[in-house]
Length: 486
Image (cartoon, rainbow, N blue to C red; front, side):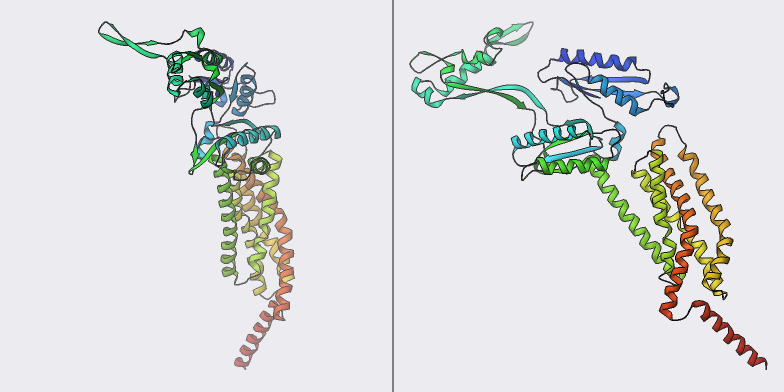
């Protein structure tokens, strides 16, 4: 948990707000312990700090009203609501386990806004963040752009200063002496020397207007009020100017709102960026968002390559360009079954479920292979395609059901897991169960029908059916044998 108080807050004020947040975690029965650091680890951020929360094991947590132990997501949602209710506090919740998927902060949504001008970059990124919060698809929206304490900039009016005989050096020396202080001597105590600095009293240097009430001596020895020769501008100071790939960049990150997917949020980010950012400014994904986009692209490529390699191997095994297509017809049904199972269980399509889809590419083809291979063997025995299918389907039904039931049974314990870390394995098991179930049921009807259709295409291309060729060859062999016997 990252807590932030308004800019300009003292360390004591920030620490008081932290104590209120700590008390909330102390009273929470799900929390095993916490560690807090006020002021930031790098120092200088007196208006912010971090809280690291450790939860109890699942079996030690209280039960939810709807059943099951309290989850980490429940605690994060409650903390987000309660901590933001503390006056003058903004709370940003983060799941540290997400940091293992990338080298960045670990938020599921991370990107940088880049462009040449720093002021335009600040305004554009701020407007983009407001627009993303208004969509309701992102929560805990934060940025790495941090403003420091407000600073007062003094701009001399050279024309007025020249007319009054005031030099730039005199203006700088006066402000430095009265506001910052100058060393007037040394003070020795117990063998140690201390600087003696002289400056205006505290009540005379608290507000920016106090600078205008100072007097500066001109070249003629006259005292001139500073308000006559300078103008003041108050604006927030910059702690740092960040860059990425040699471009000025401001990082924006946040969490996904409940019920939204990472891909939908990234699409919303890109759409909002096109509508908000001016020419020359753009958004580039980073961290977990970049890893998510690259991983899905890699998995889709692996999926397509797997289908291509499977077609090549099956083509070599069956010595045909058509039968591999018949076998691969089981793949679309497996995908629809996997998506249906994930939808019913309320799971998302993530990296783990995508791995389950890759496993399906190899599992569901075996049903079609068993059926097509045995049908081909019956045709080689001289049967017509229709008769071969009528004989092969009942014979291969039992091994098809046996292998499918065994695969589904092996995935059921993983799909029902409720222990720690089960969120990563359950989607994969659900994808396998749904894909194998639907594929097994539909391929028993679709593959024989497709096989029968494709054999007609074979017959039209060759002008004669394969069964007729086999019967003619056998008749020729029998005639030759009969001639030799005579």
